[in-house]
Structures are given as structure tokens and as C-alpha cells.
Length: 635
Image (cartoon, rainbow, N blue to C red; front, top):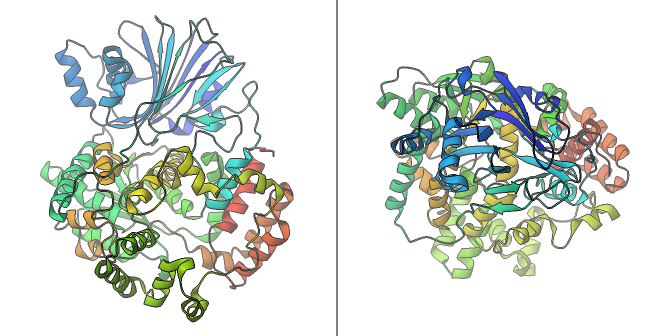
């Protein structure tokens, strides 16, 4: 896990790589080459995880000096690829996965990408053929941003490395600002919130022949991987659970490959608990006596307290736990620092919990942390998925299954049957039913028009942020669980969650690994479509079934969902209220044409006075202004 920089045409500037020293405190490298399109700069900051010796430093050259690599990530099957290359007579000078990428590219060219299992963003310069190749992993776990203008083209691990290059402004992309403020979406397109900065999306690559290409011309982006978009074969629940278990255990096994200490985040939920439990089993089977270091964020507020579940996992394994207790005052105080590392606004104070977890991991000298990102997206783990399942069951006339779902939601989640029925029928609900349930149905409230400015109306486009995600990626309408999972994976939530994960971990020079995003497991889960995901009141049914005998039952059978949450409502109405009010008004003052001021103030008052719930809206407004001030972002 590292930081990289590469440019064509722009003046060589080593400070570009120094801006991300936090991504790689263990070493640095810088090389400049000549080309027909101008100077080629390659920069690298190293976080040593595999082969800690200086011989594995970057930029790394192939043995003949033809290829040069800067790379960020981990290739988990590098040992298998290395053995395959050695069988072809290829020699190696290091024990690193970086050299395997170089040798593999020399052997197979861009077709190497299909053989890689892992997370990666890299740039390869072919000095003989004068070509530059850049690629990002299948799901965009590792970042790769770029700018392209008449002055040159540059790639970087973080947006801040590109600011200040000739022709690059910090103007705001208002369409992406609308998506963030309305729905919390970022990273769902090749565009960023900065108008002049783009990114390679997950599964994309780019090749430039510098004997033909010059700055100012198009930089053609190619999709080398896309996730499955269709239903697979029907499977029984036992068969699906057995296959899931096999794939998941093998993924965790590969993610344990490291020359430094490996630990795990532990929220007490299904996903992180499954990772810790499988880690423990694999290490026991391998004869390792080392404990697993887990880090957990805890709160004394009962509504977000998951410590009993964390303790159940710790008691079930050989884990050495580390518990931290984030506090509200520090959450606001740390916001500027987190925003600087994130490069773009973030949608909830729950990101602060994750920040604190990686901060503690660094204190405990845990350099690699496994985490559960991606499971909810593949397996419809968010409770909003119940609505889509209800719709599918209604359309199919599957009344026994629908009744079971509603009864179990009432028992496990406290949702009344009348409320669920009205929710399912929506506008088709009869008037008498709407009247009966009026107190629990959504209705216009003070401040609901806070996005109704002329600027936001012009940026919204047709159909809103979600419709934009579906249209841009050619995704089907959300008619059930299968379509919902596709949307989550492609743009609705996974891309921005991966950015949060990457920046929060790398801010503390910690490598975050995500075993649920092994592409073999992802493809299997997506092709399950709507099978074995939401069954009755259960989410992630196939995961629960697969972990029988591995997870403690108290965790395997839990039905609530929190993750690394914060007690935001209590904080905002209590100790943080003055700071919330100040933050919202600072955003309104900085961008007076962005939002409807009177509606924003009405929304804030209603939420803080308890007349409506505190959701993510206030924090999005506050953090947007904070981000704009820190990066001097202008409309």
C-alpha cells in the first residue's frame, strides 16, 4: 500500500509525491525520463508490507530496464503467478509482488490484469516502445486520479497531488455537488467534485502511445472488467452456503499474506465478525500462536452500543481486543484533518469512528487491517433492501413469503404490519389505510425544500442522483434484490465507502484489506441475484448459513444493523449543537447561491429541536462548506 504519481508533459515536481508521505513513510523514489510528448515523471512513497528490503523500492525497473513501475496495492495471488512465470524461465531479484506485476506485464501485456487477484492502481512506462499503461483494480479499492489538458497528463493516488498543476483549477463540479448533497453519492462516475480532476473507475485502464499522442489529445479509457449483470443458476441454500464458505475462507487466507502484523476491524456485526473468526481458524490450522489484534469503536449510548457482540467474538477466538471510545467534541475537532485526507466531502460522522479505529491500529503497530466493506452491497445487507424484496414478492403474488417477511420484521425490527403494508403499497395504498397510518407516514416538513435553489435545479438533471447512476452504467431499474445489489456495487454506495476506507487507513499509514471483494466471491454473490439474500426477516442469509459453526451464535443470529456508527442525533442536539449551527451558517455564507437559505435554516431548527429526525443532511451541508474552504473550491 503506497502513494504514486506519474505525469507526461508537466514539469517534473517531486513535491507531488511528498504530499502523500502519509501513504508511504517507509521510503520514496523519483525518476524522470524523456519522451516525444515531454518529460515522464514517476514518483512513489512506500509502505512496506511484502518484502521489506530496499531491493523492492519503487519506481521499480524490469531486469532489462525496459519497463518501469509505480504501484499501490497488494496482489494476493502473487506467489502463484510468480511460480507460473518461473516455470517459463523468468528470474526474480526480490520477494515482492511489485516485481511479479512487472514480469507479468512483460510476459502478457495488459492481459495480465485478468490474472491478478487483489487491489491495485499502477502505472507502467515502457521506455523502448514509448507507451504508458495505467490500470485500476476491478472494484476501485485503490484510487487512481488523473488530469488531462493541453499542458500534459498526470496520475495520482490523491486529488491534492494534482492541484496546482498548469491548467488545473479547484472549481466545483456542480452536478457532482448535487449528487453529494441530495443523496450522499461520490465516486460513482469518472468525475470528481473538482471540475478538472477525473478518476479511472474500478475495472478501467488506459494506454498511451507517446509516438502518436501529445498533450491536449483525448486519453482513451478502456473497461477491462465489469461485474456480472445476470442471474446465475438456481441453487439450494445448503449448496450456496457451502460455495460461499469455500470462497470466503480462501479469500481470507490470501488476504493474510504479509511480512508485517495483520489485524482486523471488529464492529460486532456479521461481516467483520466473520472475518475475525475465519482468521482465527486459519491461523490455528497453520500452527500460528500469534493472537489477532482487533480494534473496535464503542459508545456508551445504548442505541449504538455493539460491545457485547464484539466481546462474544473475542471470547470465541484468540483475539487481543483494543476498544476505543470516540467522543463528540473530538469528532468535530478532527473533521478538518479527515476532510483534508478524504479530498472530497464525506457524508456522516460515522467516518470519524473508522478514522479512530485506524488511528488505534497504528498505535498498536498493526500495519495491515482486514475489514468487511462490500458484503452489504453484494448481499443486500442494508435494511432498505426489505422494501425491494416486498415489491418483488407482491409482483409475484408470493403471499406466504411476504407474510413471513412482514411478521419477522415486526418481531425482530419492531415494524408494525399496517406500517409495512402501507409502505409496500405506496401511492396505491387505499385512502382509509393512509389515514389510519398517517402519524408514521412521510409527509412534507419544514425545510424539505433546502435543495430548491436555481443552481441545484440546473445541476440535478432528470430523475435525480440514483437515476443518473443507473443510466450512466446501463443498469436495470431497481425492481428487486438482484438489481439493487448491482446498483450498490457500481455506484450507490461501494465506491465512496472504498474511498473512505482508503483515506482513513492511509492517513495513519495502515493498509486496509477487504476480503469480501475477492472477485470470485463477488461474482458468485451477484449471480445469486435474489436467492439466499433476504429471506423472511433475515438479511445476508447465505452468509449466516455459511458461518454456522464458525461464528458465535449470538452474532450469527443478530438482526439489527449498526456498523461503526456514531450517536449523531444525541451529539447534534446536545454538546455539538452550537458547532452544528455555526457550520451550517458558514456553508451558507461561503456559497450563498448553492442552497435555499431559509429552508436550510428551517430544516436545521426542526432537526435540532426534535421536530424531525437528525439524518445525514446537516453533516453533508457542514462538511461541504468545510471542504470548500480547505481546498479553496469555487462555484
